[in-house]
Image 1 (tube, rainbow, N blue to C red):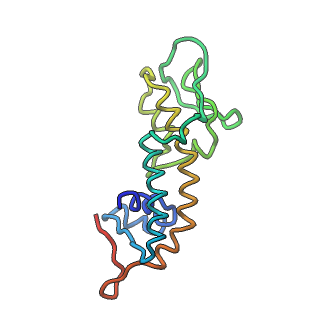
Image 2: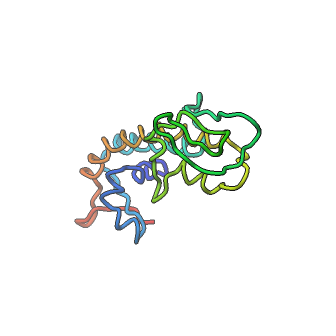
Image 3: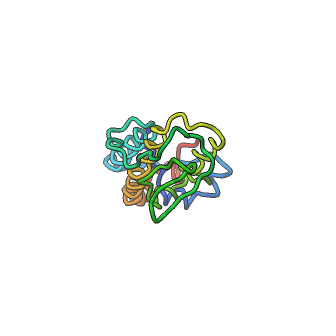
Length: 171
């Protein structure tokens, strides 16, 4: 059930359609009559959960690398260089393999990769491997969201109805 709900909440169509309601109320989750649709969405949700917990086998090998010289791991600035597909954190260190799509990926109002580094500005980056894994998780997340969005319209079209209104689980 959790994996199904997670998939619905990661549908770009769902997020756009219910953007205002998601800001002011609990999300309403449509439940399809078709068990196959439910299982397919749940499988995609499970895949997302594994990616977001950073324990998915899809994270190996990583798509990003931590590069540079010296031992200066302090985040001094956060600058994305689209041409070189890299994020500089200081004059000596950077992450490479960061596509524009990964860099621009947002959850809520935040660019995930930018926010992670900005929250650590002025401090030593203790775990660059974690950043690499987060960056690596974004690429398949975008792919899974596309898959979810191909299924989601069928979910809404076959929603369970009780008493003449669509039934939705309300948080």
